Image 1: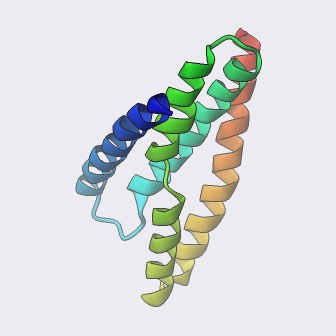
Image 2: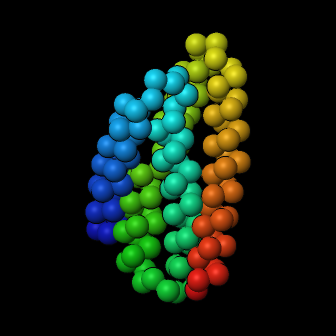
Length: 121
């Protein structure tokens, strides 16, 4: 369990800093920080899932990086909160774009990560 906690600490800090940096670089109402973080997290988890299932990385690495770091790095709760905020501001267009691209691209990025890792494994 210690590996999950250590990874979670660094994942949460990384999410916070990267999200803040991305938000500071754009003036858009679209939540690019959370969107980018969740897509890159999906990609990384796709890679790690193959490495873990093929026993290329040890269990502690999966717990540290896959469960801990990426679990804290990605954020479904913020995704939900930001979507509700857009809907409350009557910005249905951006909310629909945010939800649909987050889900579709998130799955696509995880799949691409798996394909890349499988090709290299």
